[in-house]
Length: 401
Image 1 (tube, rainbow, N blue to C red):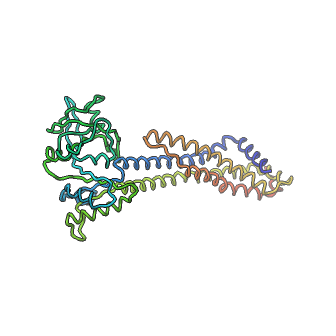
Image 2 (image 1 turned 60 degrees about the vertical axis):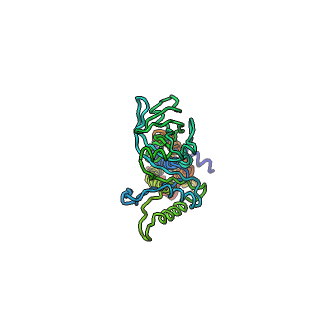
Image 3 (image 1 turned 135 degrees about the vertical axis):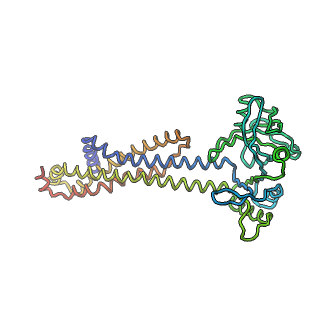
């Protein structure tokens, strides 16, 4: 009996194909929009998280200057190598520490030049920031301690100056300093905010301080926390140590910043997740609109088929069977619309992700929820027309023209 009722519902839908397709359209658009928007939002969240992660694993950045409104930093006592050594020796949970002092410089080779960020540091910089040597080597301990003028190029600078040629052993001019290239880095691409991580040149900190800045200050201390350790705990320990070393009075503001990349990533992720949820909720409204469309068409269908309903009731059909028939028609319409919406939503999100250079992420729980909600829409908005059909008086229905 149930199978027969389903076949009758399909027959009625097929008899009014165009009207059925237009009725399903609201559900198709609703389901497709929810899946596409949530998928693209998840892809954006994943990309932002990956980009921030490219800056370094479990990375903390310590810089001088008190934070003021707008995120800028006021002038403060510069960081020293002694501060870095204290963090390395006294803070538990620290995997590696690297100093950093940077300056924008013109790099010249032959008749080619490139403006890039030159960073004075040591070998720990590669580990802390997650860089890998592509060709050549990094600094030796002797080169780092003696401040010998050697350098390692990022992929962007290497391509700008040498193209496909081998750069190892060549001499480039960094400002007024002649520097020998001993290595090149594997490309890391862009990080958060579109920063090109390959647009850099690194050299021993001693050479950078002596030949470029002319002082012993460092602008940044890069700290990599141990795997699995809460970076917030390490950040708070560093903050307490530096307040003590810089003699900050109790209750005064810090004259330095400790930026936690994990915290920044969590903040950005929560923001993009909230935006994704908002867009998904807005798109879900069209599902309700589609459900109203189904209810409207089913009410029209009941009016059109009043005489048919009267005949069925007169020859012995139960009211529950009539109700089931119309309810199934509504459910079939919304379910078919849900299936088509899922397919179109996944296709749309795939091409949207490709065009926006985002990862293609399929949210299985959202796909299942959107489809289940589309079926529920059929039940909720099909019930009233089905109930109206079941409650028709057979005698009055037979008189209906």
